[in-house]
Image (cartoon, rainbow, N blue to C red; front, side):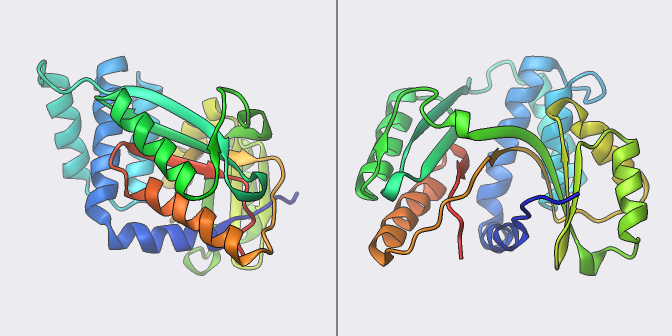
Length: 243
């Protein structure tokens, strides 16, 4: 089986994440708080919380920090109420962009996201205008250099646990799952002590678009950088084929 591995992009994102670890931990902490409020503090009975914990561990968030976040969210009746908001739109040359945010002020967040699109020569669209170009999937990336297991053995563990697809690339393995099967596959890999470079439920483009115009690349990067710097923004998905 084969797929479209984005390991180079993930490594790039991870380097950025490592440089801004505090921001990443803040983002995940917010997600933990919302997940606990919506479904309770027990990840065994709260699938959303289990997903966030998997994401936290893939980003090297310490276990005690995760536990503190869960306990705080479970016991703090006066915690800030965050709302999930999603924006869809287009970057230069029609690049599809989805922005997911958690906010306590939707007007502020909407204005900031709109500004990021506008300054990058893009535009906000209506709900659903680009999301049909993406599939929601659990995605786990494993760095070949960190994995001593053979591709066949790794594939069998993943498929037996419920994975949908397994791809081998030059430097990585990519495992895709349906969102509901992500937790079981993640746990199976954990039990086999397999290091994961990335593990999350994400939006994967059905097709990727290349940009050859330098100005378009510059504008798109401006939008993505502004979104990345916004504290309300939790995740940004796009179908740009980064070179």
